[in-house]
Length: 165
Image (tube, rainbow, N blue to C red):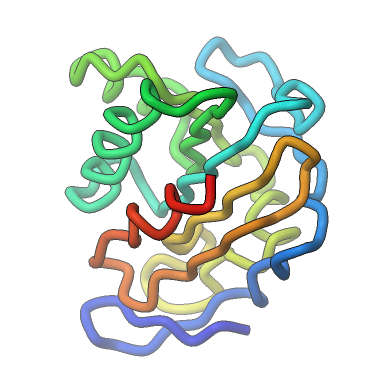
């Protein structure tokens, strides 16, 4: 269980992020068209998983904008923006913002992605949502970088996440 904060108040996650050097666990997440995506859909690509509580908060929206800007410059790499928001909210936000370089994926059905990867918020007012974190995966599916952002209101370290690619 990781200890993080929300507005300076301690909260916890359901576990720890997967370890660098391990394989990312398969997932089933919902795309904006309501079809299901799994890890095999991205085989052979490097992945930046931008994980956050909700697209409808300022910090989460900033991370999607920032990674959208960076994604177009990354060879053989996809940025996956993952939250428990409904796919409709993700699509609305990206459409309104002109964001086209990231893939939105929703864990709204059962939260299994958050639980499997130890990043579900376990207590406090955001319990059940995903904590803010980054997982970077190489083209072979091995995790090469993780960051559990210690304060939910803070942005991740974009430079460090992108530097491993």
